[in-house]
Amino acid sequence: RPPPYLSRELGYSTNNSAQSLPARSSGKPTLHDFQFGVTLGEGSYSTVKLAKSRVDGKEYAVKVITKSHLIRANKVETAAAERKALIRLNGHPGIVSLHHAFQDEWSLYFVIDYAANGEMQALISRLGSLSIPCVRYYSAQIADALEFMHSKGVLHRDLKPENILLDDAFRIKIADFGTGKVLEQGEERATTFVGTAQYQAPELLERKETTKSSDYWAFGCVIYQMTAGRFVFNELSDYLTWQKVKRVEYEVPDGFDEQAKDLVNKLLVHDPTLRLGAGPTGSPNDPNALKAHPFFATIVWSSLWTDAAPEIE
Ligand code: ADE
Image (cartoon, rainbow, N blue to C red):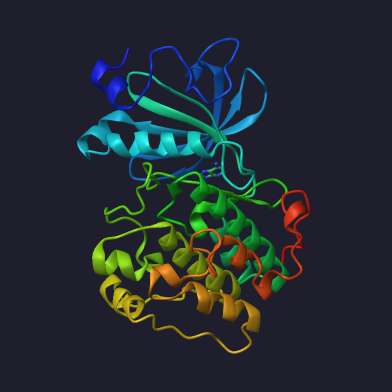
């Protein structure tokens, strides 16, 4: 049994699943319910493993978080926040679902959707860059997932191609809410320095502030990267990168799709309140205005999650 203080801090009750998750007739799963396979990813406090459930025969990704690492690094809150964010977001096709969360003496286990086609980063690396139909399709899915996430009061705060996974049908699943933030009623901003230099927004660097809009800045960086095959902001050191970010100094390569360029220009805006998608509902830059951008003219939003992915090229 885990030390009681850990159970309390992590919001786990001893033998009850998270309330908004479907109850299992057989109760909370344990390690023995899974047959573990290859390692899918590794972070500082966690390892993600492929695992096959002995209960339903399906494959899952199990995030194993070592308690001693969490405690030593003072990150107990982080794991609790990740679980809370995932529970709030359960059910959207563009975000990994949390199926179960359990723990033993040593570790926490988050059982999440397995995204069989891995990270968007690997796809970009393999192909050099993505075709415009692919960029359009993936950007539309990211826009839809961000709108949902924000409507539930969750900020991702580390959106990047490594955290955008692809499922067996090559649709996106946003993952890794380890730096996620669940906003309280009326809360709009968080003030913890998180993220990855190339995707960090100016307001984070200048005021340690992150809002929904900071996710839209990162989204602009991701669209640029899928299209051009390289970072929009990347210098020889993080310090130099941050200088470019603060001045919003970037160049778009020749041949970059004009409408994609216009969209990126409307996302990579210094003032977070003016970014496309980041405005409150009904304002000229609300999520609907983002979806109405000409780059998305051919997207059928109502069948976005059932339409087949374009040919990957
Ligand atoms: N790598 C990290 N998380 C993953 C997941 N849920 N599916 C596939 N690969 C992953």
